[in-house]
Image 1: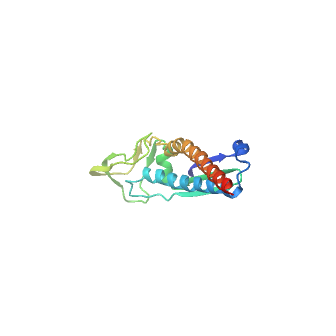
Image 2: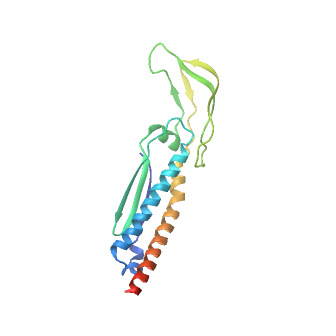
Image 3: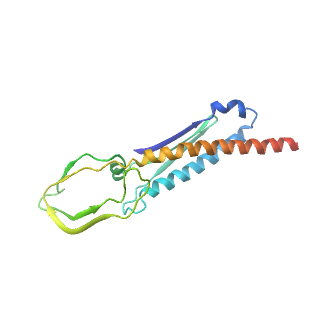
Length: 176
């Protein structure tokens, strides 16, 4: 599976939030998980926005008393080939009696180091061949880019939401 795993453990903040009721803390962690899931899905979908083949992305979350974990990814082979790249390889017809048929030109819809998808695809006249040596595909590293972007965003969001819940709880406690 091609996947991104974001895990934030709040043990190190335990002293600061000891007096916070568990339901208040859980609310902050649930909000963090929901926002992270939405943002991860948005980033993954952006990588295939111009593809005809649309991989299915799955997202799972786990919220415990000590942290938030979100796992997102896909089992799609094509996405994995683009994300992780391929080595040079030979392509031959699947069945006997018919040569490969493809257009002679091709412009990639994605680029290494860019989190997105643009115009591209096959072009030029059709050609036939019994065997083709594919040069391989340079890895786009989408999952690494998504992880690099999302970890600090998710951490900051969790801190912000816990802080917001602490303030709400303090105001509520002061009124009692």
